[in-house]
Figure 1 (tube, rainbow, N blue to C red):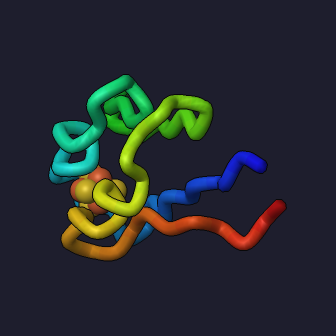
Figure 2 (cartoon, rainbow, N blue to C red):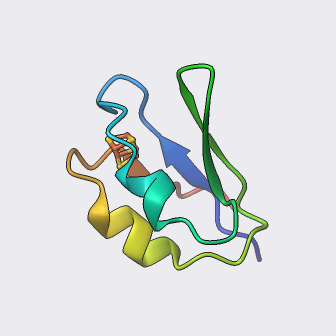
Length: 62
Ligand code: SF4
């Protein structure tokens, strides 16, 4: 099962920490927006824990 990642645009401060933590292109910053590709093999827990505002979360959707 693919876990969905959600980013709360309202609390994301575009610091880029998640982008730097992403090793395989799972998170990209483009046109002022953060894009997530959950199919990439990232350490999602790490990425989620590094976000200073808690904007990234696993969503409960399955
Ligand atoms: S680490 Fe969090 S606040 Fe920073 S760009 Fe990523 S989602 Fe936004």
